[in-house]
Image 1: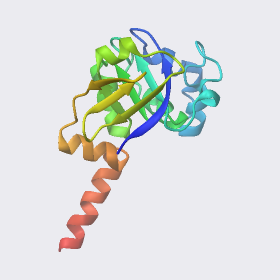
Image 2 (image 1 turned 90 degrees about the horizontal axis):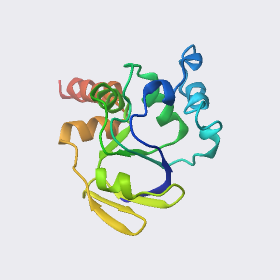
Image 3 (image 1 turned 180 degrees about the vertical axis):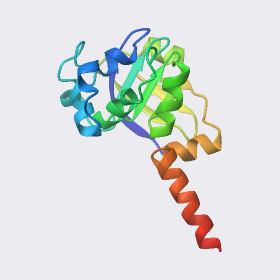
Length: 167
């Protein structure tokens, strides 16, 4: 299924302190975390994002401390996909665990321009940025199922319910 949204562009080594500044970590509700997303470098980011938009970034997106508040804040703004040249390992796993879709595509990350539209079909591995097509790696089936379910907890809840119904 093709998804469309506008591009919000960031550079290399965007750490979790930039994604969600420390002063917002007293919150745990996603809607409150969204208000702090990129607050120090892009005040009002959450108000500018439209549901389904994309973040494009360079290398090592999500580096720094291992706070899971960072992907929660991004997802709560309405960002549908984060496309980057690379991700920090802990951020990558935390994002999958909360159902935030990530795409590794260095060429598209470099090519993207803020404000332009992007389209993605994660099922077929196609990303279109500024009219240019890029092939993207697909998640292994179980990781794709976790993201589609909205994260690890909803995925496991569905799985346990299905097993219960088989008894």
